[in-house]
Length: 241
Image (tube, rainbow, N blue to C red; front, side, top):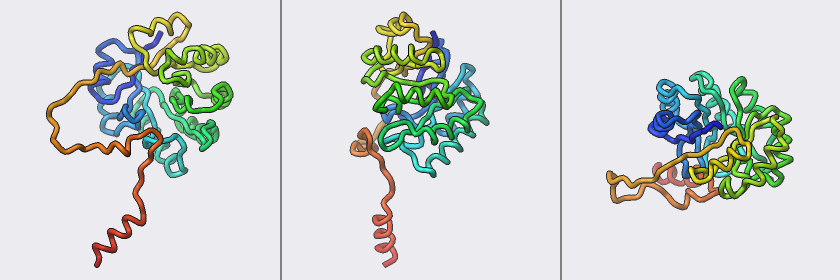
């Protein structure tokens, strides 16, 4: 069984390789569900890590419904990843009703080819996962990363098994979320060929100042932040006067 480690930094990628992981999914900001890593991080990892690297393409936190402009950004990021020699792309798009946006996902898939294409955990928001999987199989998605629409993959094991059986080797179901040393054997015993986990440790750093740099109200699930035209115009007006 293949072990994929979700690495959100250069050090995490290095640790994953050193510990014997078989593949990396590279991203940043795990606390937000992951977003696209920077060009600098991508380049460093691809220069120094020899195991296969899949890259998360997610331009922002919040939902998974993207505008045409955001889709263009995602395609540019995919092209950069291809130029740097990554093995796979992890991404996907939902409609506002949380069903799979087949058309936009297919655009990303075609941009990614011939790389492996994984539809990420946005899948766990879909109202009918079996229909969603059928739609993804039709356009040629290689893998689906899922917790089985539960808070952790062990809790979603029954749906994951159902998805795997229905897929019948047409695509790979990649369980992810809450997988650790106490439960990974369960997935192996049920015939899954790969699992995904961050295998993270959380530790406190001391070299921080007294002023907080994060903004909790911007970190909630489903929260999206963008510049406000009217606020900017008012600031410009005040400056000019």
